[in-house]
Image 1: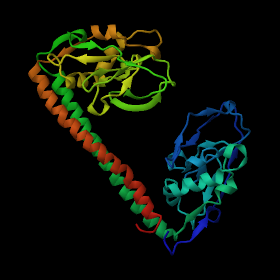
Image 2 (image 1 turned 30 degrees about the vertical axis):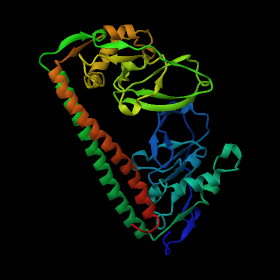
Image 3 (image 1 turned 180 degrees about the vertical axis):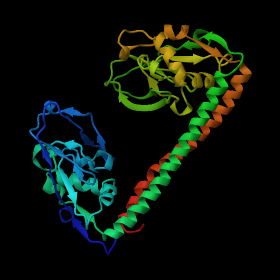
Amino acid sequence: MHNNWPLVPLREAASPIERPDVPLPGTVYRQIGVRLWGQGAYEREPMDGSETKYSTLSRVEAGDIVVNKIWARNGSVAVVPEALGGAYVSGEFPTFIPAPRMLDPRWFHWFTKTPNCWEQCDEKSRGTSGKNRIRPEQFLAIAIPLPPLDEQQRIVARIEALAAKIQEARGLRREVLSGCDDLCRSILLHDATPAPTPMRALVKLREPDVTVHADESYDFAGVYCFGEGVFRGQRKSGMEFAYARLTRLRAGDFVYPKLMAWEGALGVVPPECEGLVVSSEFPVFEIDTALALPETLDVYFRTPSVWPTLAGASTGTNVRRRRLNPANFLEFEMPLPPMNSQRKLSEIKRRVDAMKRLQAVTTAEFDALLPSILDRAFRGKL
């Protein structure tokens, strides 16, 4: 902490505020909630006055500090942004107003994103009645670094300038990756000579090859929806699930979950998921690489325009319970480019994947940047 900054209890810089309204049937009230870990306030579904059990609701205004009594211990603290001024909270969300000549709301906004804030809220919540709800007086006891108002505003401006640059860099990275994906899809979907080919000619269903033992552990894979691909999941004991047999994945296999395939949960197993297992709810196919390269199938089935056609091949009357069974998938036809086009696509896809792996490293670096900036800011080093 900066030696010249006082560390003061929040009660010296903020005070409780209530703007109570009696909810009226037929009147619609905007509601807000507070996300965990300093991720800010958000607008919830509007509510008719007849739908609440509370005798009063409290109106919040921009710049108010709002706390979720139950989840304050997990950083559920926020400053109300301009867009949510005039919305309402229940008595489960104590509200405080910063002293205008002592505490800039934006200074406290950034403080809510620090482990210091979360740890103090957690400590103040412990041992209180009502399942560790934080009491307003306990919340006001948390200590905050409080430089002069003009110093707060200077540092906030610096934080926000740096945060904007981080967001800009993230946006540029997303644009580059999206452009690379579009390039791969363009090569595949705009080939002049594709041949409609049933999947049964290109892949072969693999049988489960792992016998489950109750005293052993298994590393599972999953498949994200919306074309996000195969990922490493949880490790589970053989006692935690009922499947008698599993399938061990090999790099280059094709896999999907029966229940979610129509929402884009399909993909080729990447090298980092080699050796993981899936249940029988995940059909696994070996690709005939003499006819189709893994990159070809990966790009095609992770393309959003393809997913509605898969929905038509899925069975089930309930839209949320549609299942893409292996027999239906094997009859599904895809436009298969000639091998020379596939090789071109494969080479570009490998370069794109290498760039994505590098981008994953920079993502971790981006994630660490803002916490580092805030740490320096609240120690007076920014």
